[in-house]
Image 1: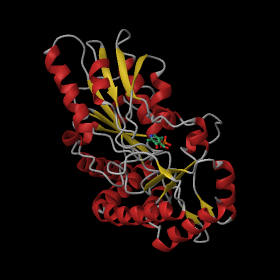
Image 2 (image 1 turned 135 degrees about the vertical axis):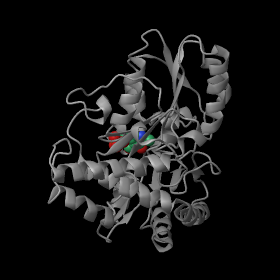
Image 3 (image 1 turned 180 degrees about the vertical axis):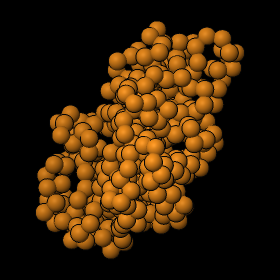
Length: 378
Ligand code: PLP
C-alpha cells in the first residue's frame, strides 16, 4: 500500500501480507491444478489444501474435517444460519442487536429475536436468558463488533446456552451457538472449545489475507444443509472447485495473525489508548462509543457532537487520512447505523460519529497527525 496515506480503516480491509501473496502466486502459476484431479501434481495441490485446513483447525482447536472453506465471512454466516434454521421450520433463533448485516439479513427469513445490548455495546445476558426458550435452535453472537469494536462475553453466552441444553436433557430440539469472528481473528483467542461455540465464521480479508476467502467451523455432530450444491467439495457442504490460492493464503495469514496476536494487541492497545487520550485533550466534547475495557485493540469509535461525519471524512480524505463513519458494508446507506441505535445514540450523534481502525502499519506519528487535523476541522 502506498505510504502517502494514513490508513485507519483496517476494520474494512487489510493489505495482503507480501509473504502471503508470494505463497499464493505459486497456486495461480505452476500449481494451478484442480485438486480433485487424479494425477500426481493435482494430488500435491490437494495435500497443500489439507495442510492449510490442518493449520486453520489448529488455531481453532478443531479437527480438520470441522473446517469448511467459503468465499468470505458473509457466506460462512449465511451457511451457518440458513443451513441450520432451514432444517427446523418451527424453531426460533436469537441474535444480538449489533450483529453484522451478513447475520441480520439471513436471520430475517426465520423467526428471529433480537437480544438487547447495554449502553457500552455488550450483550445483555439477562435479556438473552429471557428470550431463550425451548424452541430456540441457534444463538448467534459476534465475538467482536465491526463498528464499535466491543468484545462480547462469548463464554458467558455459552454458559447460558449450556443451562438450556441441560434443561432439555437430550429431548426436543438441539441448541447451537454461532459466533462471527471476522473482526476478532487478529487479536483474540479463536479456540472454539475454550469459547464454547459450535460454529465460527472467519474471513481472510480482515487478517492481511485475500478477500473473498473465509471459513465456517462446524463442530462434529452439528447438522446443517448445504447452500451451494454441486460437485460435493468441502464434504458436500460447499461445492465448487476450491479457491486453492485463496485457501493457502487464508491459512498463512491466519498463522501470521494468530502467532503474533499478543504482541500486536499489546502494541496497538498502547497506541489506541494514547490516541484516545490525545483526542479527548484536543476535543473535550468528544464521546468514545463502546466499552473501553472490552474493546478490540485497534478500534477507536468516537462521536463529535454537532459534527457531520460525511463532511469530516471528505476533509480527512483531502489530507490523505482514510477513515470510516461506520461499517464499510453499510457506507452507502443514509440510515444511521443499527449498532449506534442499539447503544442508544441519537440520529444526530450517529451523524457525528467516526470509526478509526488501526493496524500493522499504524504509527504513533500518524496518530498525532490525525489528532492535529481533526482538531483543526472541528
Ligand atoms: N462479519 C463481520 C463482523 C465483518 O466485519 C464482515 C466484513 O465487514 C463480515 C462479516 C463480512 O465478511 P466478508 O466481506 O468476508 O463477506
